[in-house]
Image (cartoon, rainbow over all chains, first blue to last red):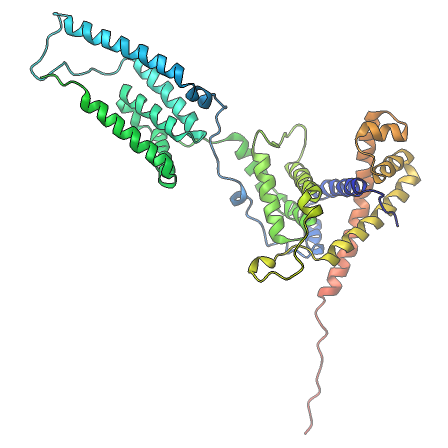
Length: 199
Length: 208
């Protein structure tokens, strides 16, 4: 009787025979296959539910560099400073413009968001989706909120609802994340309270 | 936004529902594991790997049948498990475990030994078969048995071109198929004998 001289030899022969078995069984059909199963002590009718064995479908977008960008806090800080500066200049110009009528109820209500704002909101939602798929729940929530500020109607999208549900589920199981959201919410509320109201 | 249908997943499902795919996979998984529970796990792991486009996706052009592809994935998974440190070096405690986890469907030691003996007999028969009509295939198989790894090393040992080693592999596998079939028939005969219902004993009525 042949005895392979080494463990690699033993394993390689076994794998070779296994591959031959795969090729043999893959060409079997009908009664021949039933006979094969019976020879293995298996019942041909005791079937596996292969569809149930498949893992559930998961959306897997192309990997993006959300995490490294989020880490670069200095860049975000600079960008946010410029944005705040631009906003304050625009508000000052708006207040100084005598042509703009001021109603008794405060400033004129905002009209529908422009195409640029809508496009930006959609881009933010796409980013949020990628962040959510990488389980970066905090980044995902931030982007969704930013998108909602630009396009409130878009927040009713099914995908957004799904992401928010996923974020809520993650926060329920992760106390650190929940605390992070609490701080985020209190910060957001505080900002709104400090916002000057016109009368 | 409606549910997005993944065409690759849909194609896999279609192939899995087609014909005898389930029986073929069950037979192969049981061949690798010798346990129904482990076979189920092996099929599930192989399906997950094939479904992942970054892992071991099925290319219908390269491999004609999905079952063959899944079978090769299962073969690799079992080979990796056999090569793993856990399989080779794990020392189980000598005292019996007193929890339910001690019971599993893994093959017993004598079954594993029997399998190893069967494989050795099969190897002898295969070498004899190849010696008769394919000396190059026989030489390649002997190099594999000696533990020579990799096509270039085998080619150098046998003294042929590297690409001929792959063809020799295919011929060896082809030659092994009827031998495996014969072994399976013998197994069926043995199983049938083991499972034959006991002859009914006819009891004579006691006249008293």
